[in-house]
Image 1 (cartoon, rainbow, N blue to C red):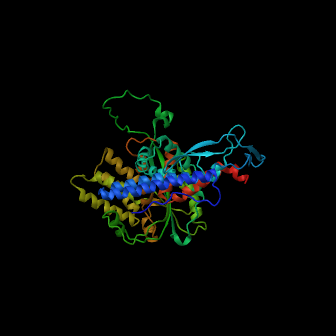
Image 2: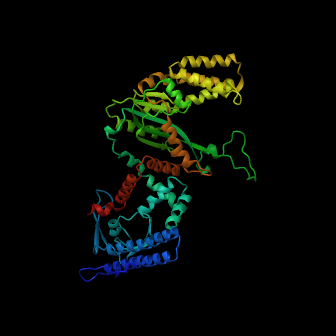
Image 3: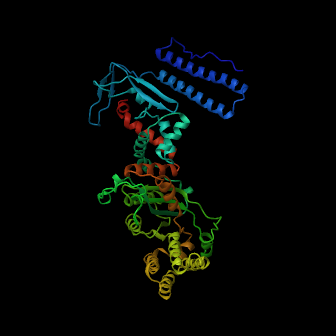
Length: 512
């Protein structure tokens, strides 16, 4: 069995009050450690389950960690730098200020991952706290929550509801954090996302593919009723009923569309029409399919498509400054997206209509011609034949065939309308359906990247049961979740801490 050592910290000269306090805190931490060692012997003798021992070790080390952190604070002192301190003015034209030391020290709580600690500081100012050297020295956050604790909480929050994330963190660390505080922290952190993204380095050219792809789509985010426009929220709510049913066409909630975009580069992937059909109709994924390089996703709710396309345009310039790479814009047929594309993206962009949206239209028409229960094989063959024609560049032939079959079969009502809408959709987007040329050039023709972004970035986090968002809260979550999914989480936190530090302690640092 190990033998406890003397719990002491040795100093060369007579210890100062700070050193004495540090020595006592270290001693408490060592006592906690040796108490744990004694427990391990008893646990082994009693054949305790290993998971119980594991948790006890973790909890004891949390206590010891708190004492070690307290020892660090003890050694750091109170930040007393003399009777006065010089702080920079509020602006470059304002003179420096000489601030006197306040008579009494001030305490502030600091909630670390080990638990709450009280930090005693010497403060300076004229009858109020205007400068705190220790805060700047220790890089203390604006709120009581440590940066490490905020980062860990944020890692949970980008995947789970705030209440669930707080509950998980409490289960692990035993710390209680208010849900409202978690929401406020999200908004504050999200304010640094855009400047962080604007300062990201451009990927190395050797790591990029020869084709630059820009893709965009929209996804709804459910909002709280108070955030709806006047015309949406004008009607008074109906009396609550035990089993209230929605009217025909009435949605469970109101949504605002978030514009979702992605940028990436990729290697050419030359295919034949048959190879594409094997992939999309028979789900035979090609093993040689290239993967997107340096994919970045983003979602904009508050400003919407304009803000998204400003970012996309900036990414195009950053990642293709010479304009030598083919630029592809992949999307569905939504006119608003193509209007923004023509406004913000270069003129030489190759616009491609997403093949999966085309297939959705073909299947919708197929069920107008065939019975869904008894003619599935016929419908599958019909869709495959039309898809092959489109991939071979025979768009006009498909359009004429749709209109002819609708007339020949004597369709009426909704079925006739569905066929007409699809024919008109293809007619309107025919310039974006040159699939034979796209396949020969090796261009991507499916917007799976942005579809995945709509699902992972928006739907999986924003549309859970019962969730309703304020616009600002939703945008903050989209910003942080996008940063997390882009793989920038650690780098973003380093940036956030540095910039909050600069905002909080600029006066002290400008004055040296």
